[in-house]
Each structure stands twice: as structure tokens, then as C-alpha cells.
Length: 116
Length: 115
Image (tube, rainbow over all chains, first blue to last red; front, side):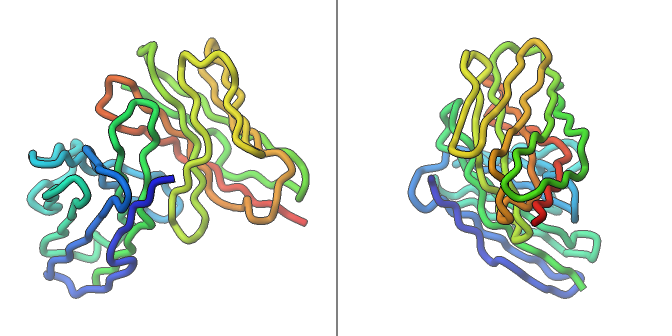
């Protein structure tokens, strides 16, 4: 299957700093990328849909100024958690899709963020 | 709005036995896709199997099969000959054909395979 990488895999930061997470599709062009957040033992919660060359579409309740998403190319999307606070600590997962209806989303390995 | 329901928070199965993980869905759309993913403790989401709403036959992928009952809106995952490595969280998800490729996930079932 297609490969999606995510970097970093783990990050610990101080409260008030910003953290950037990268999501790359390695062997296909992703017209759309998605960013999810997952709390321990909970389901994935979609945060936003990222389309190359256009503004991200955020789900209800997700602060777009807090979680900045940039989809600069067909293989790279970034999520920046700005002015991170301990409640932002979570597991963040990205996924990418070539766009076909039957095609699954291909998920990155996730990033564990801990804000102290 | 679409909804996925997984009513089993946890399941136990003995090694080499078969296990069924339940999934029901709710949508008024006629065209959609159903997916199952496995999430081990490492956190990665592993795609297992896909069923389209217009597919007449149940999907199968190795030891995984999807028991698709459209009238009952259920899409249960059957894992045959369970292995210790099958212990993980399993998520059912749905994508509407006209829904911009967005996936809606269920709450998941934690499967534990025992000796």
C-alpha cells in the first residue's frame, strides 16, 4: 500500500511554544490530506481537511488560529500547534488520499505531543 | 449526518478461534464505502478491508472478511484463526461517496487474543 510519513514521531515542548508536525505522502500525490486528533483509548476525531493550494476546512469546534494547516504541495501538509498548552497534549495522526472514491485514506504513523 | 456505532468496547478471543466485531451505521445516502482499520499499541492505523455499498459480494482479505448486511446497515468484521498479533484496537469507518473523502469513525473495539 501507499506510504505516508509523519515527523516527528514524538515531541515534548514547553507551554507557550509552537510545534510543527509534517505529513508526507511518499509514493503518491495526495490531493487531500486529513488531520486527526486522538485521545487515549478514544476514536479519531477529524480536525481539518487540507487541500493542496487552498485553505484548510476545519471541523466545528476546532480553532483554526490554534491549529494552523498548510498544504504547500501534493506531497506535504503541515500542522502547527501554536502557543501549545498542556490540554493540547494528544496523539495527532494525518492521512492522505489520492482522491478515488474507493481508495482508503493512508495514515501516517502519528505524532505524540506532550506539552509541559 | 452519518454515524458509526461499535457496541463492543472490548472483546476476548482464544488463539485460532474466529471472532466477529460488530459495526452498524446510519446514513440516508445510497452510495458509501465502509472500512475497517486496525490500530496496534504503536498507534499506526492499518487498513484491513473495504466494502462498497453497491458491492454484491462480501469483501474478503486473507483472514479478514466483512459481513455486509445492507438492509440491517451492518458491516461486521470477521477475523478467522485469530493470532496473538491480532490484539489491537479495531475501528469501523464510513465514507460517503459525495462526502469529500471524509471518514467517520466508530468508537472502536479493543480485541485481546489469548492463548
